Amino acid sequence: MDNQTTLLIMAAGMGSRFGGLKQMEPVGPNGEILMDYSVYDAQRAGFDRTVIIIRRDFEQEFRRLVGRRMENMMDVDYAFQTMDDMPQGRTKPWGTAFAILCAEPQVNTPFCVINADDFYGRDAFAVMHRHLRVSGDYAMVGYLLENTLSESGTVSRGICEVEDGCLKGVTEHLSIPFRNEFPKGTVASMNMFGFQPNLFAYLREGYAAFMRAHGLEEKSEYLIPRVVDELIKSGRERMRVLETDAKWYGVTHREDLPGVAAAIGALAYSF
Image (tube, rainbow, N blue to C red):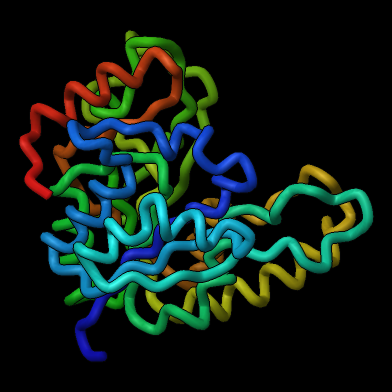
């Protein structure tokens, strides 16, 4: 188990409308979706296995449509975000931190967490893998804001405060246009995090507190950026900000899809 690393993909939000969400939109020349590129890039960077968080009620359909293709690239396991024990009236899952907590039985190595519907770029996986192999610190890939914007409309981004190579805080900006007043070189978080297995103890503790305070609320969520912020500000952990010149792609707006497909196609992947 020494020096092994895991890629953890949050895909449970695909839900009962599986096949109709942007995560499933083909962007590659042979019908590849964004998750295919993440698994491919992670395998090439040196990650040993992938764990995909899904809902149990569409496990078979997921495996049939996309899972088997990924299993040809890397060892793949599945974790299940359950909807059991929801309070009366609650229909939404508990959020990204809870999703990660559901993967605890499958993850016992340093791991990288990503979203299912983002394209992070080869270099991002490479710098994250190098970090996880040599450091016990948590980490975040810090993207240049200008490499994450959409010409089709505004985007929400977490703008990072970085000091001595470590994350000190993140301020959420909800409507950043393609042309904006942020200085060139501004660092943005795209929620690509690297963690050690001790994160799960923090998540269990925080989840219990969250449920006591907000468990009956329909819209409250237990989110991983908030957990990270609390761990940093309390001094319990530090998070390194890893530099990359990779360009992030995502389908924030429907109009983004042709440009994303063209940009990724130009990168000449060979599955």
